[in-house]
Image (cartoon, rainbow, N blue to C red):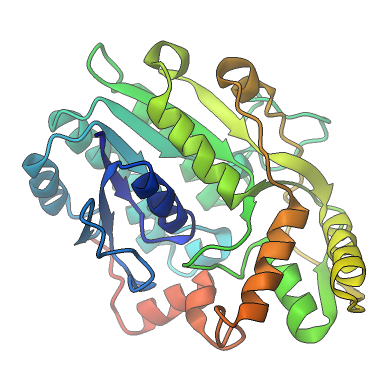
Length: 339
C-alpha cells in the first residue's frame, strides 16, 4: 500500500483525485487549509487522514511528514487562478512562490521519494504556434503564470539519487467534482446555459486547451506508478481538444439542443483576457502511453446531470463555487494573511 501526501487535496481536482486513489487502496494524507470546506471528503474511509494546514507553515508540514514514511508528495495547493491572485499579490506570492522551496525541502528531508508538481499550461501565455510543446519559451502574462513556471526549476534543483521529481502542465480543467468550481471556462459556460439558457462569451477567439477532470486524476495516478527512469526531471503537457472559447460555447449550445432539447442563446462581449495557445501533449503519450479519454461533451453532460439530480445547490450565490469571490471574502475577514 503506497502512502501519498497531497497538498490541496480538498480542492477541485484534489478531492476527485483522493476519491479515485482511495478506491485503489492508497493510503492518503490531505494537507489543506480547507477554506472551501471538507464535508465533501470521504473522511470515514480508514485510509484517509485530513490535516488542516497552510503550506506556508513549514513546522506543521515537517511535523506531519515526520509521522509517516510517505512514498509520494503531490503538490496541488496554490491560489489557483489569475483573478484570485491579483486580489492581494503579496499574499499570493507568499503562497505560490515563497512557500514552494521550503515545501520541497521538507518533502525531501522527510524521506519522500517522488514529488509530483501541478504546474499550468498557462505558463506559455500567448503563442501563434499550432502546437506548443514543453520546450516552448515561457511567456507568462500574469504573476500567477510566472510563478507556476518559476517553481519548476526550483523543484528540479533538488533531484538526486534519492529524490525524483516530475512536473505536469495541465490544460484548463473541466467537469464535475464534489468540490465544484464554476469559474473555469467549460464549467462557466455550461452553468450559464443551464441556469439562463444563455452563454455569455468574453472575447471568443482565444485558443484554449481543455482537460477533463477525470483525465487529470488518471494522469496523476499514472505519474505515481510510473517508472522513475521515464519521468524523473521531466515536464509533461496534458490536454486535449484545443478550441477557441467561442467554439466551446457553440459546442455546449449544440449539446443542450441535441441531448437535452433546450435552446441556448449566445452573447458576445469584449475581454481583457488575451491568453491564447494550443498545447501539444504527444510527449506524455510517447513516454507513458497516456492519452485523455474524456471530452468536453462528457464534462457538459456530467455537469448537466449533477444539476438535474440536485447535487449542485445554490450555484449562483454560493461563493464556494467561485475562487475569486471566496478568496476576496477570506481577505476581507483577515483569515488569509501574509505569512
